[in-house]
Amino acid sequence: MREIRVEKDKHDPKGLIRESYRIDGITEGECRSIFLDWALSLPDGQEVQEVLSALLDRYAAGNEDHPMTDVMRQGQVRMQAPRRRGGWRSRSRN
Image (cartoon, rainbow, N blue to C red; front, top):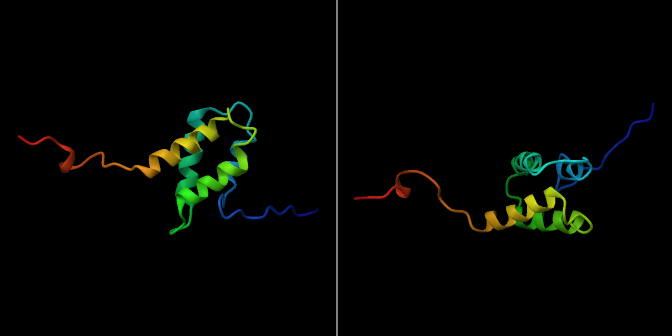
């Protein structure tokens, strides 16, 4: 029996993004879930914007209508402009 080895991708260590493009009929919601798992699996200190740009360069061409392409583009925009969404500072004061 021959062992199949897949090289680890530093931008996609678990191969989640790659596999999402191979799933027929995948939904945007499923892509969001995969994206979250991918983001949580990145090593500390890795620049997310650079990684997303590299992954979009690799997968977006020819896959413009794929839901993962849209999710990654949304991730770029949202990660560039994070905002606080809770806590005492967000509440109105009288």
